[in-house]
Image (cartoon, rainbow, N blue to C red):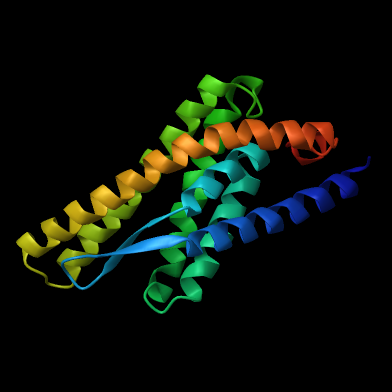
Length: 191
């Protein structure tokens, strides 16, 4: 298969995974936050991590960023955050992909994938909570309200991270086995 054939598969896969990220973000439980903001428990990060595992750092990052930013654009509560979401979710999947693909693994080592998912999730949490803290201060909110909001967002973000790591790693093994059986895995791997 030529380079153009591989590119078509990769672009199509980024689109499919972006759609999975978008739809999985809709499955959520909203949690009110002290400063009038909203946080949520959702399934989106599972598919962000899965994108990083299957498509590698760049393809996975694009799928996660595009799917998550599109969700934000379609939800009035999050529309202003869409550019940040694109970057933060891109980095969530990219860090996962970088760790999962380290030392020639290509996302095929279970223990390495657990570390990859945790690294991606921690990266996202630091960015998300840092933005929440800075936004609260820039809006002139009282420090108590900012810290209360940050505590709520820390809990929901932590729950999202635990769910994402716990589900994405075994799901990765299942998806990789199916892609390998269908001979699509080689077409999606970087290179």
